[in-house]
Length: 331
Image (cartoon, rainbow, N blue to C red):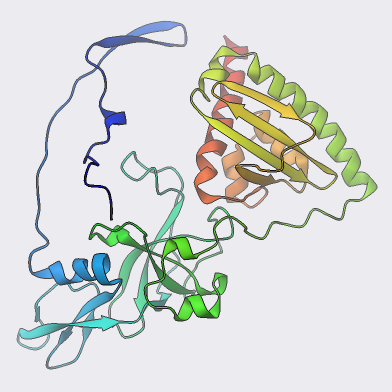
């Protein structure tokens, strides 16, 4: 469960009293801090058993009509409209099912869902249910990209370690990414899944041409990273951000290090990176850093692979730095 001391609105979103000046394209703008308050409580009412089962028992419940036997998940009514409003009862359903359609993927979420992105959102028909449950979808294979989860993909319900009685207490991953024991387990927790060691694309076999491409692209990337580190606008894009990134490609590897406004490149790389970027042809990453295409687009189109889903934020920051360099050259 979450700590009782946590607030609905975290302190980080509570600005200091006063105002500040922000400069955009050489123009100064006065920004004043203010707030509106809309706190409220809401009850789950007669459907509380569904949410309590998620939170306390790691179960998924549906409502079953006592006459026709139809099982609706989630339970969104207490009487069946198809049976002259016969009463329903709560029943448990299985935690494995199939996607009824290919889910869209959200990469750039609003602030309310930013900590979840990238994620898929689709409807899964669980075994034992007659209607589909809308859930978030993730993968253990790196960043979620099109083709990993689609219509008829079998998925497994996974429970958050900390649950508060919301539908967001659960999400789904493909059963093909889990062990048979994990698929069979009722109430599988997110902490019981290995998110840290996805299978990387193979870049071990490098031809002479691959090594030549790597060497030339690396020289250009070094120049770009150095330019970013000397540009105030680009450095601002990574203020407060720290990441050690290992970049692998056919022909070699290196490290990119972000440290609160500084960005550097080292040939040695790192033995304990925060995440790994695999660009089989290093020219793809070079084009992104040189603002000849977005790195985020290259991740989505599978030209670049990222080892951790939530590190998409870092990729977005690298795109912003490339854009800042391009804007600086125009002014």
